[in-house]
Length: 168
Image 1 (tube, one colour):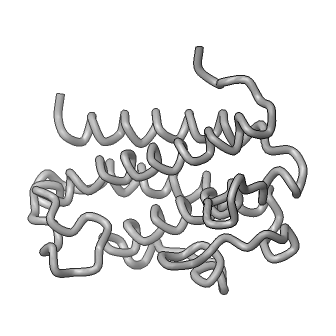
Image 2 (cartoon, helix red, strand yellow):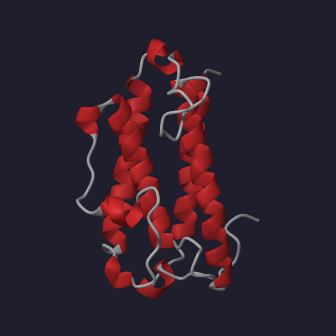
């Protein structure tokens, strides 16, 4: 199996799990539910994951990047989840962007050459989610891992809202 195959599998698997969790957030209050004010909520996580995919797309296919105005402030690195649902776009809008950006990211993965995938990732001193990775291809794996980290956060809110586990 090639690195591309592993990356594709991880990106698809992590997104499937995230989507199953997000299905359970029904009301605006569910989307911004936090067990503590310092904890990320489902709305922030969904928007953040979409922006990370978009950032990676922009790094390697700048002409394919697409980011709604103001979303960096809401979901970008260093942003803080807001407790009011009215501060955010609607869940269907965020979900549509989340899904569209993952599809675009998978397309970029498929069209990248082996040389592009084997190229060195940015140096650790650069501000990049894949800085210091062995290669650009390994960066795609990092995106899947990053999503898993945030899905773990979603799981806590999901269970605190009274939902049964999605696995098991």
